[in-house]
Length: 182
Image (cartoon, rainbow, N blue to C red; front, side):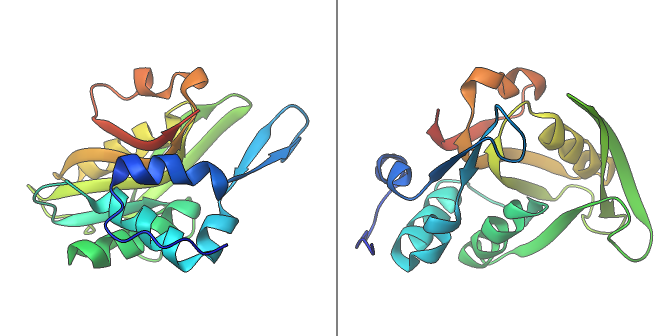
């Protein structure tokens, strides 16, 4: 279902997103309701509107960082939209060359994300993008990596915020902008 959305701002996109995000119960484990964004990605107009809404009103940005893996899909076109570079933040062991790593707690253990040591220059302003804000652990670890490079994280922008998980509280004052809160 392609929907024309010329000039759709963040509020209009927030109203539109539920039509393009599919709930998948019990994935990847029982009790979890996975937010599937593939219908959004498959609709050119809706995807373009989401990218534009994530980029909207960000001010001066030098780079856009995307968190593996669905954050890549959103962050790269946002970077193009803003005319700036894109930096992938990867799971441990996926980047060649020297990296900074940050380990964080999960409900069931730990995880680690990495970025190249030269990914950001000191003083650069970085927009951080991901698909979903849940508990905030991955976003907090990624923000720490960006800061370790000497750059400033201006905003975390996400498609969906799972408010019931309290992720904002774990982000140490980092501004968060979500297009849809559930």
